[in-house]
Image 1 (cartoon, rainbow, N blue to C red):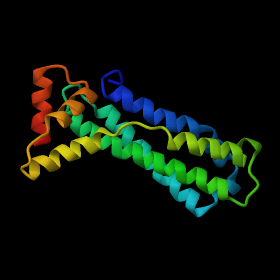
Image 2 (image 1 turned 30 degrees about the vertical axis):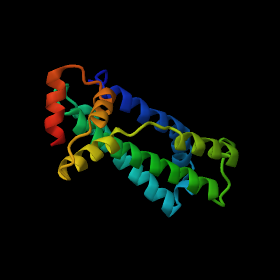
Image 3 (image 1 turned 90 degrees about the vertical axis):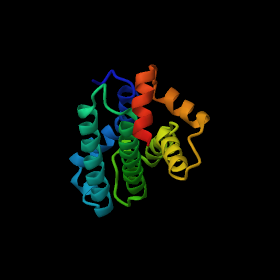
Length: 168
């Protein structure tokens, strides 16, 4: 259910990155000289695997599933997609091969900057901090918990209880 929170939010973030890549991928696939680069090949392969894993995460999402678990999985995949995309743009930019006009150094740099700034506050770091505090017997900070709950749009006591159990 792509309209469920947080699925929609993460879907849009991944889509932002992939929209920047679409013309690059089409041109690189059409122009076999560009795709013959080993580093670029590896980056495209990693990108494909990450996109496939992300698609599976979106498809397997159930409204009663743990949002905490979903966020941990999806943020790691989006980060991998972002890194692969940056590697693709860097490889193309530093390539000595003649690139089509739409892949000019300036347009590649523009895309690089856009991907670097497809920013979002990673909730997974807050979740890991909460888990670390729990393991270290420091106790869960109510401030961190509130940030997690707000970020995950947890609205009912039942949702909060399910996610609190997931944090333990």
